[in-house]
Image (tube, rainbow, N blue to C red; front, side, top):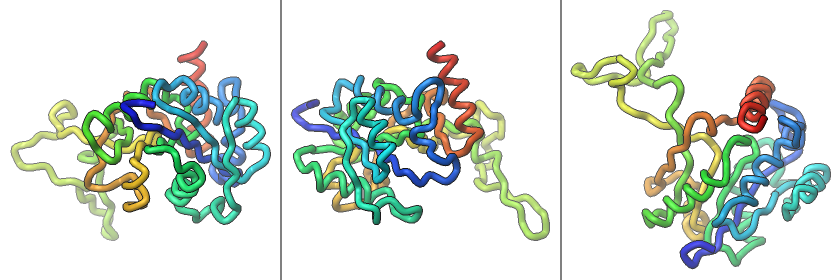
Length: 230
């Protein structure tokens, strides 16, 4: 409990991942991918509980082996087209005693307890209904272009004339890194999203913001983790 509020950590882990088959329990730097997120959640000072939402028996067994509680989700919430928010709302319904849900995707294995607690703390300090983790992108969108049918390039974002394209002088921008999403349960039920005009950001360093989507991502994350935990 933190500031009189109860926080539920929620790790969504379905069995039908496409980019990297069985990725949630695939070994990454010596342990299942999902274990890195569960260990960070268990080390959090603010989370009151952490559950894994899955329809998959093998994932459930792996999560339980890591000391996590499992919420068996219905098969209709495990399809490729199932919106992620439906999984969150299902977990909220099954766990009505918590004030906040903290979504922790297992595809962010470099996130640590400090990031979880920092995002929760920022949310309550600012009195915001939502706080999500963000990071500065490695490539600025001011250097990005669209390609027309005539093969001509058009800038994605236009800079004012007095601005410069020097990296140090470009406006700062941020992107979601997928690591931590904090939401007040009543606001989540109302908006059905963590992203609203009232959402605030918690900045994480680039080295802990790596998100796994492909097999190449998986290999790179493994190397980063081996460097961080030799």
